[in-house]
Image 1: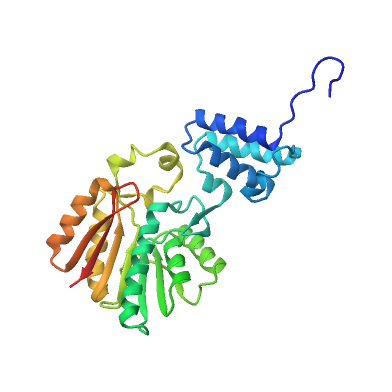
Image 2: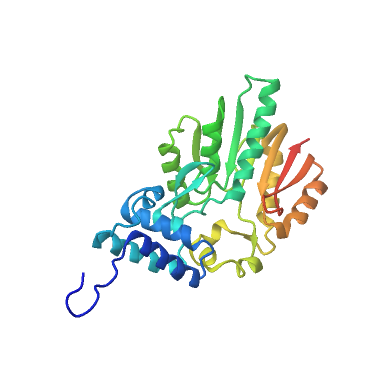
Length: 299
């Protein structure tokens, strides 16, 4: 409506907010500006993303716009959306996240799938066999919880060295109601775990080299915990330590799965092959065709 001095300013409807923010975040370097804008506006409105599509013509109240502006400012500076909203979906489940732990990523779902496939194969032969699993460097607990939600007759130990990360993992274990299955434990990899006690060891450990860390996207390098990213000068050091411990802790014929960077894939595979305690070693690729995961069976 005109005030007699000119045309009234265009209202900041939900659609207009999304359009403007998408372009702003694109210029700021976001790889998914529209998705970011939708997630942040839905969080500011305390609604589901899908609800935005039926409210394009609405103009949010000032308090919602203020929350949204703050979210957008922080996102444009590089802060990850998952940390801004405090949650991230993984394996079709919602998880609480904080800057104390890595943000769950789709590539890591391959660890869950590999573990579930092997469990299904075992249960096809031994349907009543209980399984004991360790999720090492559990972070948010997304792997352990996803396994617990999809397996029966299983006990899972979710291990991390970080007290702060374990607080997040415990919340996710509680929120998903898997406390009877998942024990959250502070520890340095598999130290203290009895010999020959595990059927599976699964891990998304720190595997980034110091050199690769400097080349990571700013939002990862500056906001996600370095302790959960860098695995040593070469990136393979922690994996080598973990695989040595896994060979001790796994039962005969037990399985070890570990995520890694494609940059160190060949070295990790070579190290396991030279070890002599592993068979059925296989490197698996992610959906982008990158070497992302190694599987090995204890001889």
